[in-house]
Length: 243
Image 1 (tube, rainbow, N blue to C red):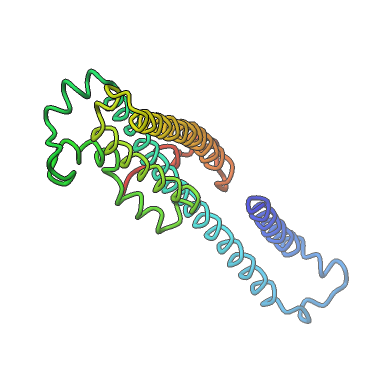
Image 2 (cartoon, rainbow, N blue to C red; image 1 turned 180 degrees about the horizontal axis):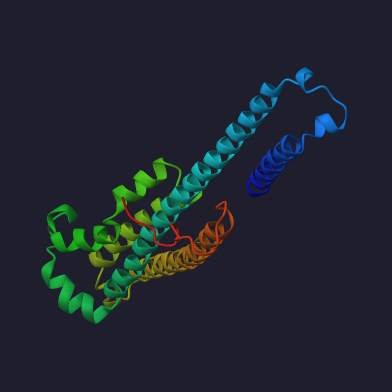
């Protein structure tokens, strides 16, 4: 729409300028029997200046607006990439703690269950490492690059993940017990595992789709919305940069 307005304004301005030049060159008013002295020539200059100013305004507004759209898209894409990376790292870490051999032989020997999570560096690393870019994600959310629903899901998954890791490590040997309460706890852990994996897979699929679609939209806008673009304009949206 903005591109169409820009084109119409430019065409109108060029047309008006050509008409004024032709009228002046052929002295058409005299040919029509009009008295030139009664025509305010300065009026044409005023009209021409107005057309030039309007054209420059439209061009400037179009360029600034397109750059702002590119900036917003870049921020949104970057935030999505950071969140997607966090979710994929959650899946990777879940794969470790859910592997009984790895958990019992390589993780548990390094964890002191008599200490709190804060005093166990391995535990804290497993829980927090997927969210190393948390502050950047929150910064992007503050600017509107992350919508409220996505941010809510991010916090929900972060809490579910951290809680599950703590429970899984704390009760790493629960499968060795056969009591009814132990069976209930086993089932709860399994349900938590299935729930978080389902949510992670759903969000990963959604984000991968959004990132792919967003890159495509940016590319199309760079080719189509830039006045005078010939199709070789550098794509400023396809390579999101972190802050």
